[in-house]
Image (cartoon, rainbow, N blue to C red; front, side, top):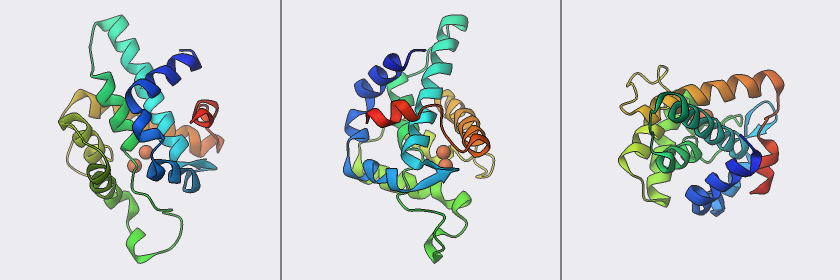
Length: 164
Ligand SMILES: [Fe+2]
Ligand SMILES: [Fe+2]
């Protein structure tokens, strides 16, 4: 997929999230390697868009692209730097999905799919499995991005992320 196609989809469905002050603050929080939570979230959203479009073209499987993009953008909306030692950041892996969900429902109107995506994206570390196909896709996309960012210490989606 071309960069312009990703940008167009992100702008169409997630502009309000991407340009919000809290989401912009994610640029200052590191996620994996030298990749910020902001760029990681865009990478997860782009990976979801790419796989969803392949599923649709090859297998006729139709996912809700708007929910997919919004849920992926907000999946790590926990809004702190988990590398900084602090009592409230303890066991980040286990608790950040809940924190992201609470922040996201405070700041944006979430649909059923987005809620499930954010709350369940840490499966199997968080034991409740995803309930919709969009959440399963995010689970996979998030892990692919995390592995790539940890190994390369950068993101292949950083140019798209800089646009926002
Ligand atoms: Fe996460
Ligand atoms: Fe993530």
